[in-house]
Length: 241
Image (cartoon, rainbow, N blue to C red; front, side, top):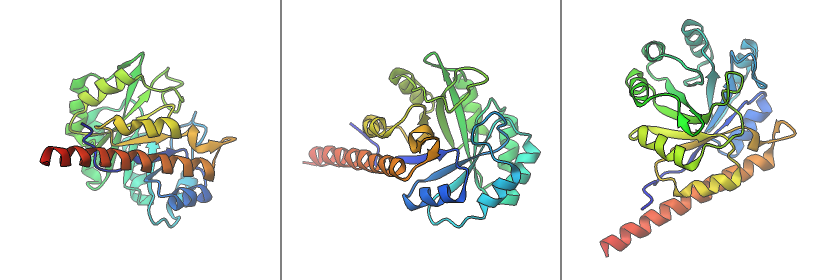
């Protein structure tokens, strides 16, 4: 029985402009990923650009700082100065640094990437548990190809690998990234333990975040969630009957 009764959350990564932020907000996208201290990232922001985007008025979408092994003190400063209260730690950060972030900013929601290579999660379950103890709120499963292709690869995680990872993170909210388009998103209605999806290329046309692409993703997430909820309710009613 499908037990998910809440909508799939959507994060769209690599936002570069105020107009892109406004677009995501218009379509009710949950999170906008702002790349910072990702020198090889195609959508990396300078600190001045990050500050400018943090001032854009939004009604729904939450900004998320996405960084790769940035110094903890510099990260804390950036979060305080911008008011951003969600962060994705995309590298191989240690639990001690994560605990420092949480202690410095208690209302910070911490998303931690788990790296899947050749169908297996690189981080052992003991590390996953240590991350949870340090204050990680949500895990993001993403494909790891190499040190030069840690994320935003567009490569899907195999279904059996995703199932194993969801089992390892049971009890924690988990998102999945890599190769997710509107069609694949709609199919995720059968993945009961999934909290959300992290998307980059499927939200773009010619490299830029596109209204039609975002609308298709938002529609697919809504339909997948509604069907999952209805299936769950039907099952509950049949049991009650």
